[in-house]
Amino acid sequence: MSSRDQKFLTAFWDFFCSLKLTIATLILLAITSIIGTVVQQGRSPQEYLQEYSETTYRVLTALNFTDMYHSWWFLGLLEIFALNLIACSIKRFPKVWKTVHEPVLAPAESFYRTLPNSEEVVVKGEGIEALRERVAALLGKAFATPVVTAGEEGAVHLFAQKMPWARFGVYVTHLSIIIIFVGAIIGSLWGYKAFVNIVEGTATDKVWARGASEPIDLGFQVRCDDFSVSFYGGGGGGRPKEFKSVLTVIDGGKTVVDQRPIIVNDPLTYKGITFYQSSYGPTGEPTIKLRVKVRASGEVQELAGRQGQRLMLPGGGSVRVVDSTEAFQDFGAAARIEVVPPEGEARSFVVLKAFPEFDAQRGGDYIFSLLDMEQRYYTGLQVAKDPGVWVVWLGCAMLVLGSMTAFFLSHRRIWVTLLPLAGGKVGVKIGGSAHRNQPAFEIFFDDLKKQLRDELK
Image (cartoon, rainbow, N blue to C red; front, side, top):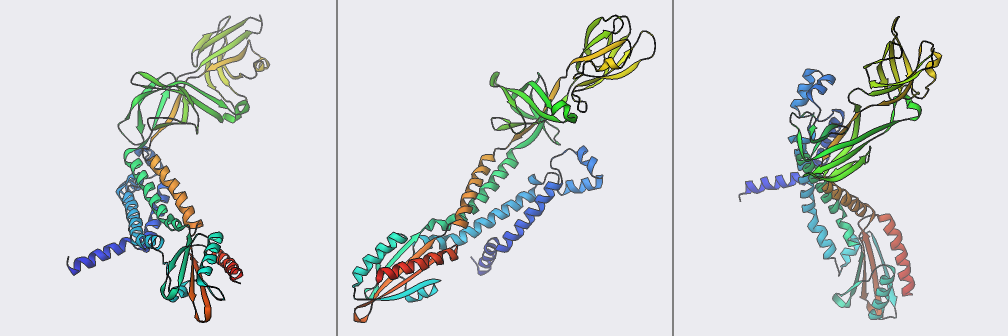
């Protein structure tokens, strides 16, 4: 390899190990994510044209802003960030591995001068072997069992450490981010988000992604056996309280999921495809049941028919339901009916199911009460398939574990050297360091020094 090639490879390697690249990539990912939040993703051209001008829509489409999470440039940003993390980890990991697995067991005087915490004392009248036993016992009790190493000129070195694996927390964090990216890319490439409306009593095996011209084949059938909706007390101004679908899944002609109710935040999942309760709506005209009483004779008759269907009244004339709703203001179900008497002009008024005697106050030849109203609905389901979701969950779990290890745990090390001096004296040096939370370690080290002085008295 020529010198020019080596320089190019070195520059290429340094580029991907650069912290500046990390910061720039993170900023770009944050900005593009904001764009992806502001611009709705995966909608149909008609929906975009309702919100934006044609020129703006063309610009958004050209820049892939309408489906940016599948765009080449967004996936490229993720890949660059992943390569950056891998390169930084590879560059720094060997040094950390050596620090953990090949610690300095026989530190020199110069090594102690590099430690942020150190102390020296001189002990008289006691042999070095006896001191080694006492110091080893103290370290084992107050910190961790030390490794004893014989040094030069009769010196004895003791080394003890705690939580050396805490240094690898940052690499677990890096790996977790890459795993999350991989899961997101898997979901982006092989997953989808689609929608389907199923009328009560019918089934479908296809769903439609937004903006797609062709449906997606599920490979099995989903049937809506029932749909119900309830409203806040007395109608609650028409606000739905809960809407629920009862779904059955039929795969290969066999019922594999039988009448499973789903509501918002309680979806149904089968073969990795999840059905969320998303919306609902009426389908067809409702069936209305009315009770009519002839005011003059007291004759009572019940009538039933579809909305808009004209029904004959006792004594001639007719009635038809013009409009109806399950929730009319705070009064519950209501119907607006039109009565055409045998003679005279047609009249239109509202009857309320919760107040069957309300119409008696109106006057007229007939008194109407709304008995029942049956509306057939379709259920609107959001359908999502994300084969990378468990990969993302694994990455999230590793991210939490790695972050807690990296930020809250510390690799702490203690060295003690016993050096024979002239006159039967023994010099005792103690030093220590921690790769995180130095203030807490200083407090611990000061306490350990005090215990050592008391032990050597």
